[in-house]
Image 1 (cartoon, helix red, strand yellow):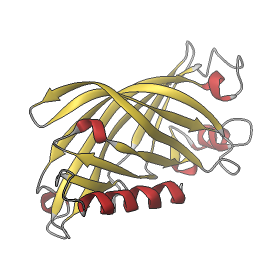
Image 2: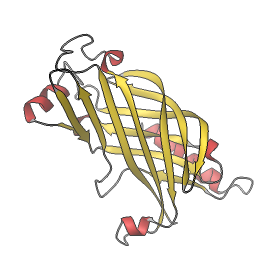
Image 3: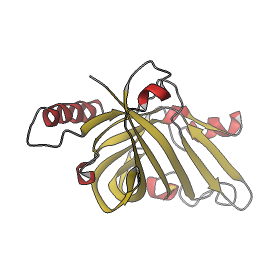
Image 4: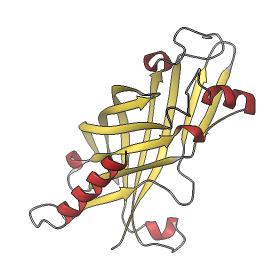
Length: 208
């Protein structure tokens, strides 16, 4: 993922230096030093409901407020940062039989294309298609995402430590653990096959 991140940063720098491209193109870093960014998950089976979140969120998104079609980037979650409602459950979840965090340390989404863009007051919503990789298995997904552009708001979020812009991404979508080889067909009465994921994460583009 470091290679992808480096390429995106290089692309953004080149775009910023080209007079033929929109000046609004910026690169947003989603590795939040405050630790506020997180992704929550829910598995609602007949006998048990399992929920939790992950705080190991990072990623780079290139965004042009004047041209939403130019969105590109990736979001990464550290598998070991997933927490569940109790320690025993969390141990099982991260173990070899389930997510196998030791062998598959990251969960990623790499954007490929965007469609059905609908303008909003402070951003837009759209369908974002990309490759979602979990436990080493990559599947193409199309998910709804709301992009909220907050110019000059980084200072407020960082309590004055940095100035710049913010980009907030919000999305709720469902995957199936069986699609990613996570004990397909097993324990369905206690561990649902469907996993609901919710993201509400902010990326920062500090002023130069």
